[in-house]
Amino acid sequence: MIFIPGALLKVIIDEAEAAAPEECCGLLVGRDWADGQSESDLVVTRVAPSINVTEGDPLKSFEVGPKLRFDLMREIKDTDKRIIGVYHSHPDQSAQPSARDLAQAWEPDLTWLIISLINGQAVHTTAHALNADATQFEEVGLRTTDWQPYPQREIT
Image 1 (cartoon, one colour):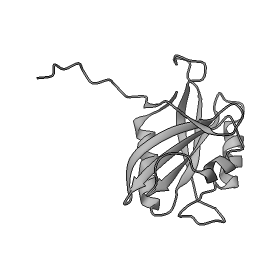
Image 2 (tube, rainbow, N blue to C red; image 1 turned 120 degrees about the vertical axis):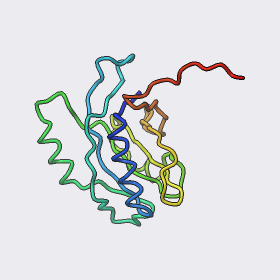
Image 3 (cartoon, rainbow, N blue to C red; image 1 turned 90 degrees about the horizontal axis):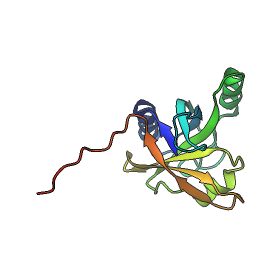
């Protein structure tokens, strides 16, 4: 499961909508969540938006700027934080990883957050991780840290 504060998810969604019809992208910084129910639970503590530096069509591909990545790695060195994921948008496509995403997923420990946009509006966000043999993505749970279940209500 990956947990993200609602305010940070809003930053990503706002960026995705502003970048449309092109794909936005960036990095997720975080740590293991000590209060998580599983050893694999992660919490996002920061989002780092990137300029999309793809050499391909920015309507269908993305690449995070390498300078951003190296700067972040230096900044969080010797802390409990690390780069835990990458995010990007899929304008007018589903929030499911594409074949291009799978081809670019060469770091098995990263979570991929994908925001689907329809007509420039965010409609769905999902999180994914590579399976054990790195041949496909598997969806992982995504929840905001301020999420509360709806109170029980009687159906009338």
